[in-house]
Image (cartoon, rainbow, N blue to C red; front, side):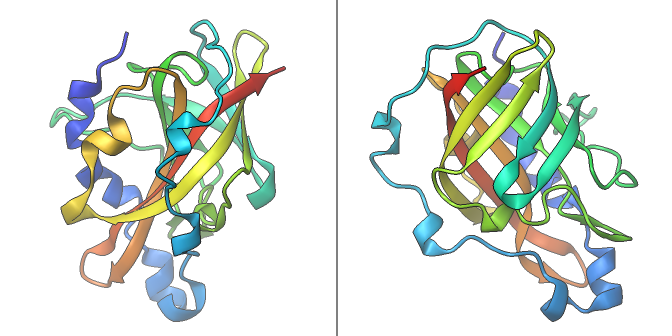
Length: 206
C-alpha cells in the first residue's frame, strides 16, 4: 500500500531532524556535517540504470552504509497529527526510521528512511550522509531474512522552501529508496535550513 499523497507535507518536519544544538556548543564552522557536491548530483539518465526485480513486502530492521560507516537499527515511523513524518528519538544517536505506512525497502515504489544528522551530544546516524558517493551500496536488512541491496544514484541538498516533494516522495515503477537527513545552511535561530537526500535503486539481494 503506497500512500504518497500523505508524504507531501513531510519536508518541513524533516528540517527538524535536528536543530543543531551541538553545533552551537562546539562551533558550526568546524563541525558542520559534509554537504553534497555538484558531482554527486542527480544524473538525468539515472532512471535508465538497470534495477533488480522487486522483493515481496517485508518490514526492514537495519540499515547499513559501509562507505560512511552507518550500521543502525530501523524504527517504524508514522505521521504526526499535522500529517508530517514523525522522527526517531533524538536521544538515540545511532538509530534511523522508515515510513512504515508506505513502501517497504525492496518492494516496488519509493521507500523512505530518515534519521538525525546530529543531536545535543554530537554527530548522529546520518552525519556523513552528504559525503556519500554515487554507486555506493546501501544495505537494508529485512525481517524476512533477506538483505536488500541499493545503489546510490545521486546525493542532493535542498532548501526547505524549495523542497521538491514529488521528486523525492513520488511513486516509482521500480524499487527505489530515499535516505533523508538535515543539511544545507545553518541558522542559530532556526537550525538547519534544508535536507540532504540520497536517491538509490534496488540492484539485488542476498
